[in-house]
Length: 345
Image (cartoon, rainbow, N blue to C red):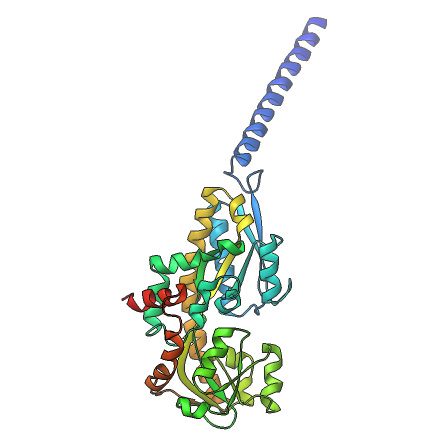
């Protein structure tokens, strides 16, 4: 009988060791699999912080959310993005500064906001450099567009893709801007961009830099006679309530750029970089579709809100009066870039 008891004890001991060894082996395999990046999380996982100042219904935010989903799917959860909208981490300028300092990973900025850091971006504030919407996107998707996208490395930012922000046109309180002559003596709100100010001056207007948040009141109180922007921005800001004329002369096409901090970019593996680039470009196609839909909806809402839209504008007089401004850049890097864009079929 004692021998039988010992046999059971030995059997239990051996069985316990076998089960323990099996569980340890399985556990080690799972840890190894996760650490090699084949499972969700692990030592090779990374979460990137992305912030912008637009509302969650904006095509830009929806595009960035799409980018986040695609990155997570491509990486099997090893590379993720947390998206902060509506200025939760600051306005566009603050986000750009955080990006340059390395405390923020990714943001969206207008090309105009980059002008003082990346000289090449000034070309997007130049009037009538692009023939039309189709030419604009052919250039951006060409090697030239890719080269411009990477020009920000000197400012510690790396471009991932372009987002559509439409064409900018004049909208005014009292009378429409149907020709450059209509701009004489007219005060026009512009972004804080030297090129944008030069353009309004070249067309005969009086450029007045005012922050976007103060523009509604400035139009309402006649501090300025008008402004210039794309249809969704005019609609979402409700500027159509005080400015009743919108002339679609489409003088500039200024894209948004999705940027990543160079320090973050340099810290990523080649595999993660490729995933991020692929996801960004796919989200760009998605965002452009949303932008087109949003623009069409905005135009309907502007007209329903009492704004008169002037669609059949003769753009040639505008093109002619700004050509002297364009020619001032002949022989400069900006002038060469304009020439390359215009030569791009």
